Length: 256
Ligand code: NDP
Ligand code: 8X3
Image (tube, rainbow, N blue to C red):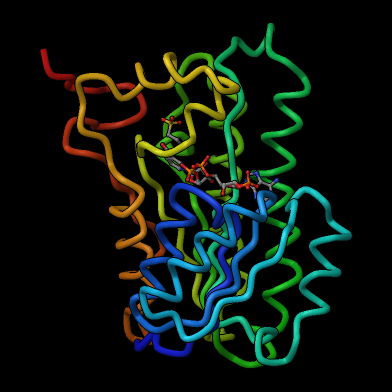
């Protein structure tokens, strides 16, 4: 399916996988709706996207945890932006690595509110239009963490297991509407993810990627564009992808 002129809405487009996905769709001539909380970073991605060939870009500050703001900002989109063809539910984060019985309740709420409830709020606001128009594609960011839980990561893994269930349920609920639903589930990707997880501790974050060549945000973006560009009768349900040195959430072959 050609992506030229398609309206692609990406949440969490200010960094990492979301920013790389914006640039990858830009290279296909898409129209980009980009949202995140850090507006300055979003503006910089928008500038690069226009240079890469995006037909147009519209940015807006959005915290996906704020249900009213999600509803309002999507309801207020001008007609040329309101008919979203592809929604990439990418906004997400992890906080901490702790045993469940010792974890921070604030961290849990942040992860659950962003990765699960935020995804649902955006989906609830965008998908009815897709159903009305009889076309659209929702691409959700899952993770190897949703397939296999790892120690000290139960709550983050739980949010990605929820994403997996919601992805599958949404695809079932949309059967017969021509709206497609895909989960792209990467393993370790080197982005701001670990710096955010460890609240700015760059040294600890760097250790996550030591002696391994992880996936890049661009690897994942390329996959997202690939699933979106399949012919309209093809729905890729789920893509599980890792770097070659990772087998699952727990098994890595680090260089000596
Ligand atoms: P980054 O930290 O690099 O980027 C996360 C993005 O999400 C940022 O643009 C951030 O923008 C945005 N975001 C976070 N919270 C909110 C919020 N409340 N409202 C709006 N936007 C928000 O991480 P990644 O690019 O790695 O992560 C992107 C997605 O990929 C996440 O869902 C993550 O769980 C998933 N993933 C990541 C993997 C990895 O190893 N990196 C592996 C598998 C999945 P801002 O702060 O400006 O709001
Ligand atoms: C991100 C990958 O393994 O850090 O979803 O949880 S992991």
